Image (cartoon, rainbow, N blue to C red; front, side):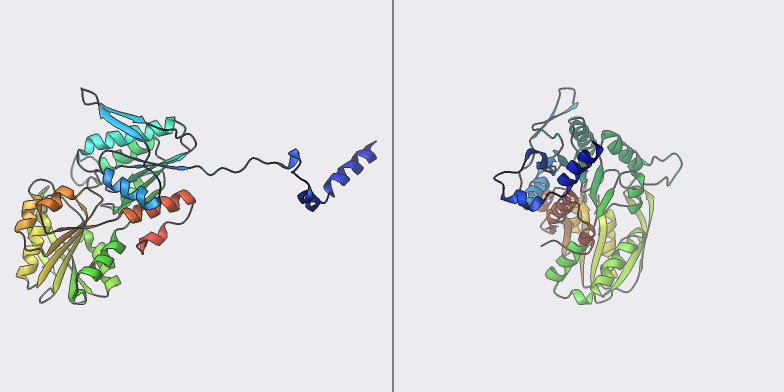
Length: 354
């Protein structure tokens, strides 16, 4: 009896599978369920809907349906308007405008998608909120960036995509993957296309903390760099500035990751013109421009102040003709596409997608 079972088994294993192609349909025991790749869903918070729309237009998909509203006591309410079960979800929300409300809205959206059985939830945060509070620089100071990282993780985020963090070590505050994209390739492209005499330029950092950023750009352009050492007596106020480097008879290009009230870059521009610079440009990743920033830019000696659209700039551009825009939606869209398809994102560290 054992011999007959073995014989039947050997008959099955030696069956010529190629012959099955000639049959009208495969036998039921050869049918397997197809492997399903999760679909991509992109939702926008209320902080920067224009950027989210540009991202989905670039990817050729529609923005996910979501309704965000506030109750009369100003509590945030979020309703995800379509199924996200088993989907790869991306939530685009920048740290700008009413920062605390927008941060809370993002946390609620992440949690709503997570408990609705989304396969993966990625928070796309072009401008990371509270990034300047990244260290304990005086007694009893909070490290709020770490707190925000904890909140995002607890809400259910599986992955973070952000751009030009104020301090790269913020990535270490997370126990989940963080992709910190750089605006540098887009900045290099803008300099080459819009400053005709860029070979006679010098890249300047308005503080010592940005030295690494400007040396990288200067090396890529094969030009020199300088930096300005500043001392602050208190937040948003600069006490003194010292220029290190020679800018005489050159175009000075100030590069920084963010500008809030613009006191630093406007003082820096004056210092550069006093030192003999022929023209001054400022290139910033995150143009927050709060308080008197726009009027300071209008009164300063800049040829142009160039910012990316990680933060909405429509109103600022109406208020000042000096403010120009670099669109980074293509970088964010490509990062989302590569993450969704399981491809490497490191290509974007040195190149701008076409």
